[in-house]
Image (cartoon, rainbow, N blue to C red; front, top):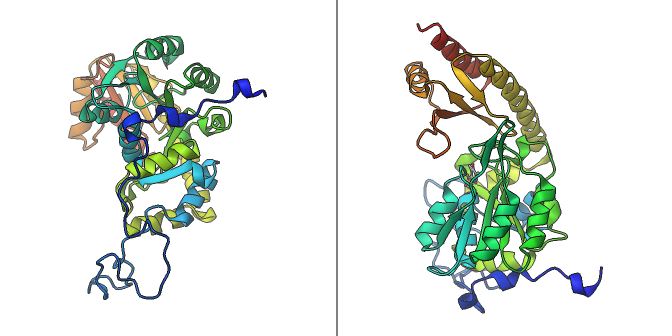
Length: 366
Ligand SMILES: *Cc1c(COP(=O)(O)O)cnc(C)c1O
């Protein structure tokens, strides 16, 4: 490849007013060594409830062990990965590092995950929308329209979600790659793969070798069943990762969460996770087929995720019947384009049977 086709430097996408910004210098930033640590105003004895004595010290901001284990799991190098308080924090960091308040623009593709627009709004950044289209095969993304809008409206960040939440659709990786190539030097293309494990298809991490303006979000909250530990990752160009870390809180990860995440990424735990993912997929297909057969249901959208988006003839009746059976699902009816739709997370075999029973009972008008 000639130097003429060198990928554009993603650092050019960082807010110019943050050039040279080094963030907060914490007691853990300086690489010092010693036996007696009196530099962080920590107490010299553990709290009485801290029986193992692991909580007295501030945690490592980016524990190498955790970063290495996540990088191995996601197929990148540790320097390309920043770990934070869920991918929610990563979304916020990307918006704050790349977009000037009142200046730049974020592009989202509704119906999609709400946090992209929430973070942009809180930061004072404009949001433009290129809606997904709802066709016979489910929702799909108009990549040409995205490229057009991004190039003409000063878009710095494009948030794609694959598999989509709440739509369940997978985005074709070649189209994501073409978009990244078109927007090189102009915008960062973020692919949120919160549900990537359930899609059984290649991650956009593979695009990073050729496109430095791609970022991928991963999380332990969904497939790894650790939503309460708040561990998410952003995977991107190593220079961009350094900038994002400077924008991050000094000690983002609680020590117990670091420990549990490291154990969850050991090979035996990952094998158990992979087996759980395989059962969710089997259940997703079974639940989807059973619901599709119910006459009260208009459409079950194809899903590559761990939930089903379902359009009812009368979603209110379904919601009421499910709730009276003690089953709580996500009401999507207020979302434009999702009238009469509910999002149902795939549960255990027994839980899914209860959902099917309740939906079948609607037909009998009982
Ligand atoms: C659940 C979800 C997240 C949030 O992940 P955390 O790591 O728990 O913050 C991010 N993106 C999408 C699309 C999600 O559905």
